[in-house]
Amino acid sequence: MLAALLLILAGCSVPGSTASPESVTIHLSEYRLDPHALTLGEGTYNVAAVNSGTISHALELTGNGIDVHTKDFAYPPGHSEGFQVTLRPGTYQFFCPIDGHRGLGMQATLVVH
Ligand SMILES: [Cu+2]
Image 1 (spheres, helix red, strand yellow):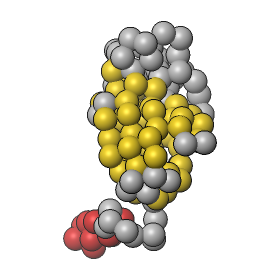
Image 2: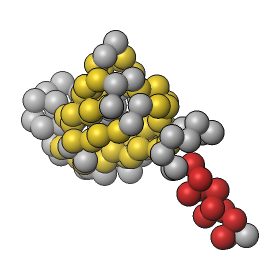
Image 3: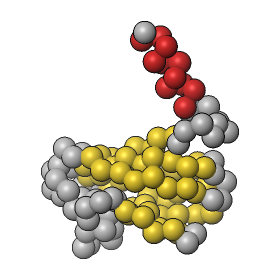
Image 4: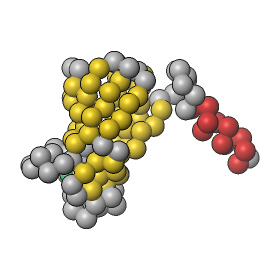
């Protein structure tokens, strides 16, 4: 049973697979995003934003005609929100939309090719 589950999970991350979206996890803390630079292939992704910090944060992704964000523009430590996004080749920016947090370092560059 466990082996079968692992096979299913592995199948989801095969490059070029169109069966289901791949997952990307971003950790939010004061005042950074981890990872702070990402490179992905084009496709549809489930982005999870985990608040690993000690104050409220959120996540927004803009660029290449896209502007998506977590349901809440601020959610507390220990909580996770996310969104699904279809990415075409180009350059995007992840950032925390809370006033001032982006300037303090809560941003990340995403390159899609
Ligand atoms: Cu923040």
